[in-house]
Image (cartoon, rainbow, N blue to C red):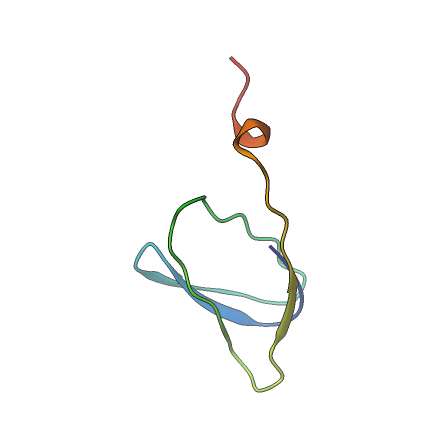
Length: 59
């Protein structure tokens, strides 16, 4: 996820996390998470979904 503007607060693996403008976040596949805005202005983000073969280290 690329956070273009604003701030987001989210729960991941039973812990709260936060990110601000221009952050890049890599979330593990299959892990439940939520996301909510920190301010009334909201946030703008872009998501990129990568297949397992992209993230699997070569053997």
